[in-house]
Length: 253
Ligand code: G
Ligand code: G
Ligand code: MN
Ligand code: NA
Picture 1 (cartoon, rainbow, N blue to C red):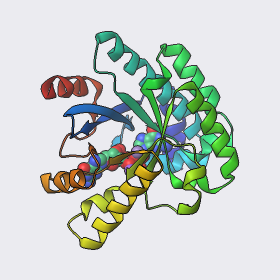
Picture 2: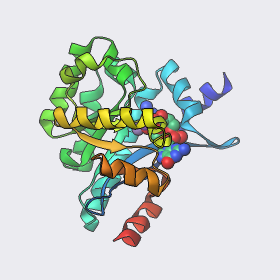
Picture 3: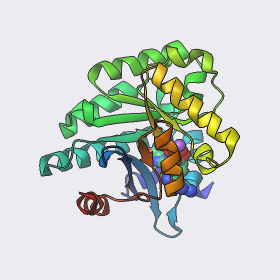
C-alpha cells in the first residue's frame, strides 16, 4: 500500500511531529501532566491522523522505530522544558503492544533517557488493556523494571478493553485513565455508576485516576464530586504543538 511505503520514510524525512495535550489537576489548579500524541505531516496528503497511520505502523512493525523516535523527541523536549524551569509535570507516551513483543521497550526508554538527560520521574508510558492480555507475566516484568527506574505506567482507555478486573492487581501500573466514552455519558446514571466504580478501584489499589475526554463543567463537577481530580480533555486544551503548550502553561499560571 502507498501509505505504508510513505510511512517507512516518514521518520527519516522528519515528517512526524508531536502534539501535547495537558492534564489538569482541578483540585489544586495546577498542570499535572501532558500526553504526547504523534502526528504525520504527509508531503502530499497533508496532516494524517494517528487513527489512520498507527494501525498501519502496528501491522508493518514500523511502530517500533516510530516509537523510538517519539520517545527521544518527547524526552528531549521535556528536558528542555525542565531547563527552562517549567513546572515538574510528567509527559506520557502511548505504547503499542508491538514494542513489548520485540522486548525493545527497556532499551528504547533507556536510550531516550540517556540521550536527553531526563529524569525518569518525568516520563510516563500509557499502555492499553490489550497489552496486558497476552503473556501478562512477561509484560509485568518489562513494566516493573521500568518502574524501578522511576518511570510511571498508566492504563489508558480503562474499561473498554478485554482484560478482566481479576488481574488488574497483577499489573505494575500507577495510574488508571477513565475512557472518554464514560466521561462523555457522565450524565447517564448507569455510566455514573461505572465511573464511580473505576475511581473506587483506583483508590483501593492505590492508583492515581485521570478522566479523559472532559469537555464540560458539568463533567468536571461530577468527576470532582466522585473523587477524580485530574482531567484531560478539550475543556482544558486540545492537543497542541510544543510552543503552544508552553504558552498554555503560562496563560494558566
Ligand atoms: O491524537 P488522536 O486522538 O488522534 O489519537 C488517536 C489514537 O492514536 C489514540 O488512541 C492514541 O492513543 C493513538 N496514538 C497517538 N499517538 C500515538 C503514539 O505515539 N503511539 C501509539 N502507539 N499510539 C498513538
Ligand atoms: O486513546 P487515547 O486516550 O490515547 O486518545 C487520546 C486522544 O483523544 C487525543 O489524541 C485527542 O485527540 C482525543 N481527545 C482528547 N480529549 C478529547 C476530548 O475532550 N474530546 C474528544 N472528542 N476527543 C478528545
Ligand atoms: Mn493515551
Ligand atoms: Na484514552
